[in-house]
Length: 82
Image (cartoon, rainbow, N blue to C red; front, side, top):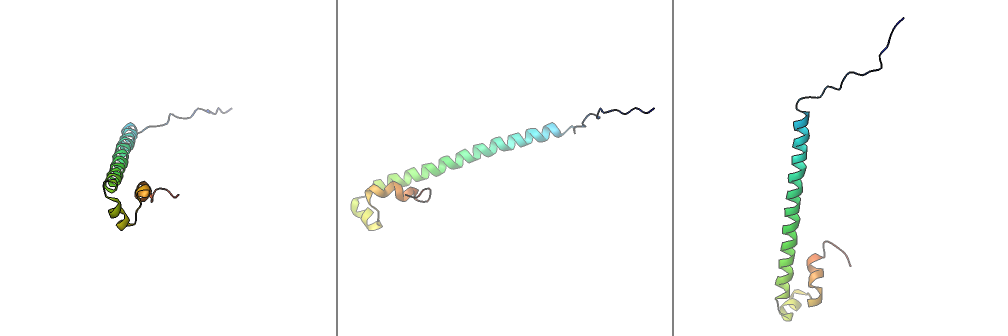
């Protein structure tokens, strides 16, 4: 008579598995911080561009082909379509 065991040997885990997972978590964390900084700096640049255009006279805006009411649309036109 033969006996068979259905028990599986314990999954051998590399001693560096925990370090690899921690490293992946740190990479995601710092990538998130970098993304936030990039988005924030882009938004700040656009805000400064809107302020700069609003500071111009109507004649200067007309020479650029922009109406005062269209300044925000002009600055953000690459992000949305109206």
